[in-house]
Length: 122
Image (cartoon, rainbow, N blue to C red; front, side, top):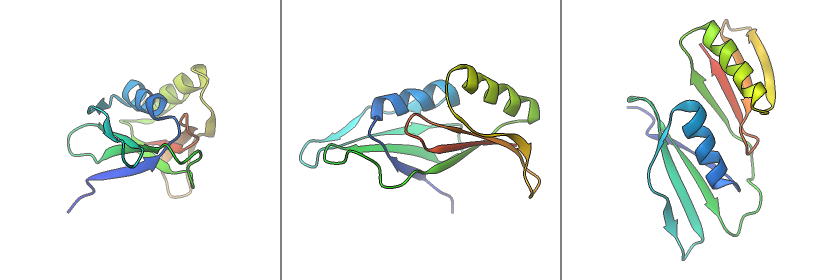
């Protein structure tokens, strides 16, 4: 058994789609639109074997109820450091500076355009 996908709500569908495609090498399907419900979504796929990410928006919702947290694994500490600095230089908020956590993970955290926490870890 494995996780098929994780879904998060957004009010900035296109911006979030572009963020995960650009910075995490995701690929996107065509936008799904349900005009009756005012619902739109994309599935963003990553490397084979990883869960995909569904980003969803409803026209009757102006703010997501909760902020979500996603985690991406990088090959090593240098890649975590490099990516964190790239996000900083692109103007994204660094929610957690690179560090070794209490349970031994080397990680940092950024905020995506919707304010969701994205952990960058090895």
